[in-house]
Image (cartoon, rainbow, N blue to C red; front, side, top):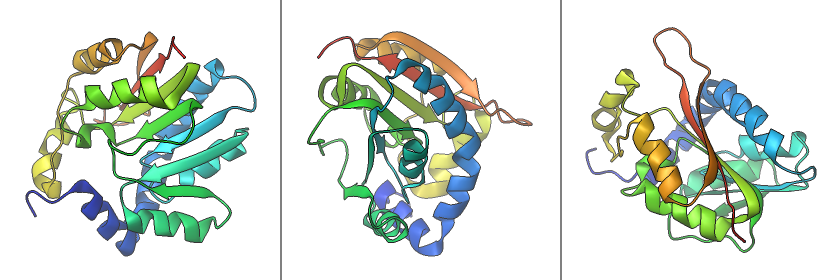
Length: 206
């Protein structure tokens, strides 16, 4: 399985129904992330979930007051599942980091996506410069990071590339990408799990 692309793994997981477990497992972290991020966005905001899986965060964003919310994912099977669950929703199959949205958003959300990239900082730059409105907010969460020791075996276990960065390195990447008012949180910690590492930043430029 070594060298397998992450999108292939997620398509296999979608066919196996593992997306439902991912939704249940990630919900506490995502809800905490959005509770923080939504303090900084206007009412009736627009949003996109980057790496949306079966679309559950898109539907949550709609429930939380988004004027419009959509999702994009590199796994075709996840997008098929999202569309089957929510036929009226807006879900797009797009390979990241190359895919670009048609419009800009007030809020970009991402959970468990960035570390699958070879260069997460470049993706952060693209999000700020191409995805976000002026003063738009990025909220991104990762469970694989240096201080979460349990996660360090994941690349070998799953058989896909993961970029391992420390909390300080993620914070620096946000600043290097041009975000301002950067906040770092660890949320939904439980037992030996130090929590999802959450990065929040604002795009100062249009």
